[in-house]
Image (cartoon, rainbow, N blue to C red; front, side):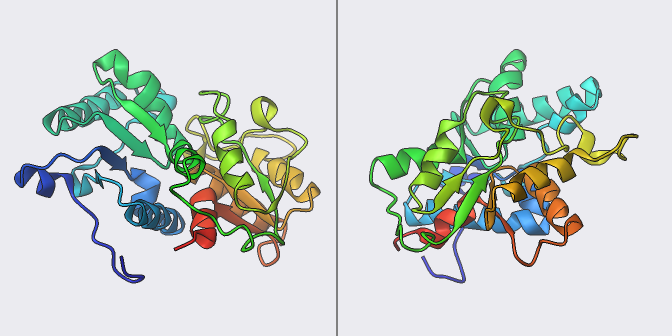
Length: 264
């Protein structure tokens, strides 16, 4: 592995050579197209490469999971997108899916089986937790020891799938001082983007959800707000800008924090 160039395996190329990777890494729409979240994709790929994980991406064959369409009420579009993906997965005999987006994780795990798509779906924080606990991913606990971090629970990882432990165990391994917001885990406040809300104008009210959630994060006195979802990252980053705190408080994804502290 070099710092500037990492060869990313493409599923189609591997299959042409008669090879089948253990994992499909599902990059997701944000991980592929959003400039900020591309950095998270790159961070996770650095980790996969360092660990010599047998994986591949679909590249140009990857399309949307259909999650935004279903949450916004367009069931026909969702099923069209889902069945297209299931056909692709069947062609490549996909059994395990790694994803950096809780929305993709949730829909693959809970909705696709209704259409015949049954896979072992792993959110990247669960993957990192496993490798850290097994001692295969070593962390330099001195790198972030002077940082105070608070974690924002993504709805589709937390309440929808009851996964609160994995991201916190990964953060605990970093050696930072980790603090909880007053509403956390099953009581955590949404970032305000889920359920298709990311793509529509705000409704009438006294305060937008992302502002209230950012205020809760700021109340902890943390220097870093950790997220593990592209929707959450957009909203928390916007909240920091709204509060004029973007130059002193930083929003990093857990994958980025792990890369900062990895013992290479």
